[in-house]
Image (cartoon, rainbow, N blue to C red; front, side, top):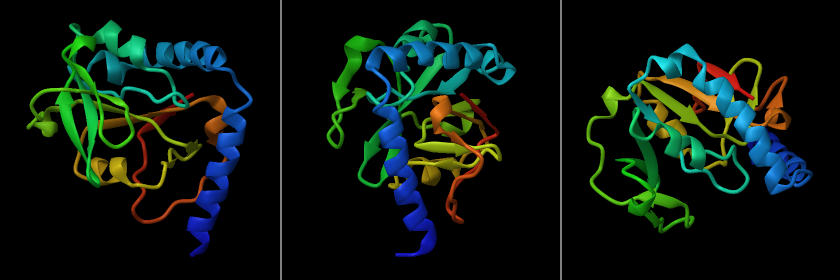
Amino acid sequence: MQQTAIEKKELRKKVKLLKGNYSTQQKRDLSEIILHKLEVDNRFINSNIVMLYWSMDDEVFTHNFVEKYYGKKRIILPVVDGDNLLLKEYKGKECLVAGDKYGILEPDGPVFETPELIDLIVVPGVAFDKDNNRMGRGKAYYDKFLRTSDASKIGICFNFQYFESVPTDIYDIKMDCVIC
């Protein structure tokens, strides 16, 4: 295993342990602060079509945020399809179904066929750094998609996921900024 891969594996373990120090409620409380910073960011304010994500239990909790802005902006959510992300427009909680791969709730409906219209992509990650580098879970779903997009990219994370530096390789896509 190459050095960068080893470093990433070790950092993923470290972050998992750090996340374990916080209750679900503490992570939800911290999420509100992070998402408030996002909603006052000009990139978000000036965006009409925003790609968010329906959070897993260990990520910045986005469910309420998606609901808050649904109807005010077009909200696009990713759906895992094999080794790639498909995009679908969020049409309300009643249109969510459990995804095949991770059981994450995903929009049911047609694929959003015009990703070039997305103004802003809000990206989760395992770890970020001061140079706006992002380290994901290791499947490269986001990196593959982000490579094809000209939209603004904002990473969001808890402060314990923000480091001086994270290991990167040539496939990792930088964020325009990170909010924690």
